[in-house]
Structures are given as structure tokens and as C-alpha cells.
Length: 257
Image (cartoon, rainbow, N blue to C red; front, side, top):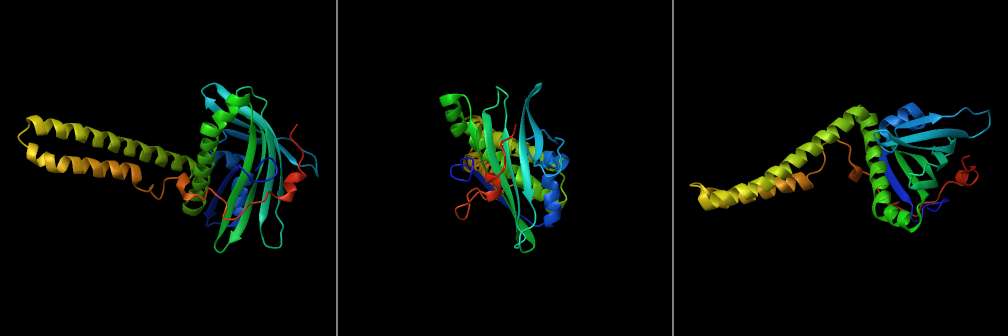
């Protein structure tokens, strides 16, 4: 996207069956936004005067006792003939541990039948020179894309099914643990079956069935779709259906001070 439109930037889209005003409130109110967005621990609006864009402070706790903070400025556009709404922002972080130096992006709300296409496009400039560029390409940018998509699906579950963000996170951790246990059991099954083939009286039975059972268990753990109440990044669209353009409103937005 550069800082003006999606090019090599991140794009995430979710279709949410919810009222547009309710979706707008859950995404524009800082106390609500920080509940579902995995990328942020705190979001606070800063005081502003009438007619000025909204400045805000954000923070992310990356380790116990280590919080990376930054500031930004945002503006929203609610009234368009086709019902589409847009929110744009610019942001920066002076924290020396923040790979993300500065960036910009937008949220777009597109009415679609009984729901809303909720989408974002954003990009940023990494710091730390060549090392930062490599770390961003190989690790940080894919992680940010996944976290954004996972958060969008968690928001969808909140609006569509009434599953709070906190409950959705518990569901995700429980399913992750269950899948990990299935993988351990599958791998243990391979070893246990091999041992019985060598020494046990039931060797013929396990010779035929244990490897198959272990493979089925492993396949379910790795390939089965997430449960309906578990947020999953895979449910979101990660590439724009057509070439996306950043809103013109973004060009007029000042850089955060």
C-alpha cells in the first residue's frame, strides 16, 4: 500500500452479519476496540478541539513488564450515498523496540445484503535497517496479517453469535490445546504400535490398525476446520477481489505528532 494505498501492504476482509451502526460502534469506541483486536492492549483517545481529527494513543504488551506504545490520528466518514463508511488513520511509534516506525491505513464498511463487508488495508515502514526489513518480511508482516484476520473473526463471533472476545479467546486456546494433545497421541500411537509389533501378543491387531488410527488422529488435528465458536484467520479474505485504492480522505490526514 505504501502510505497511500494498498500495493505490498496488508489486506483483510470479513463479511459480518450485523447492523452497520453496531459494527461501527464496536470498532470506533476504544474500550470496545481493544477487547477484540489482538494487536492492541490499550487504546485511548486524546483530548481534541471541535473540527480537528481525533488523536489517540495505543499500546501493546509484548512481554510482562514490556509495553510498546505509539500515537496516531484518525478521521471517519459516515455519510455516503451508497451507505459505505470509511475510517482512516496514520500512526507512529518512537519506542526503540518497535519494529514498526510509522504507517497508515483505513477501515471500510460496505453494506452487503443482510450484513457488512468489513475490510482493512494498511502498510507501515519498519525500522532497524536491513535487519528490520528482513525480519518484517519473514516474520512480523505475516504475523500482523494473521493477527488482524484472527481479530476480525473474533469480532464477527461477538456480533453474530454473542460470543464475547474473552470467551472466544478461551475457546481458541482450548481448541489449540486439544489439537496439540491429538498430535501427541498420534505420535505416541506410532511408537506404541511399533513396540507392540515387536514384543506384544496383540502385535497383529496393532500392526493393521494402530498406524491407521494414528494417521487419522493426526489428520483431524492438523486439517479439521475450526469449531464454529472458535475464531480463525482462515475465514477472512486476505487478498482484495479487485485492486484496492486507499480512500482520498487518507491523503488529507496529517501525520501524528
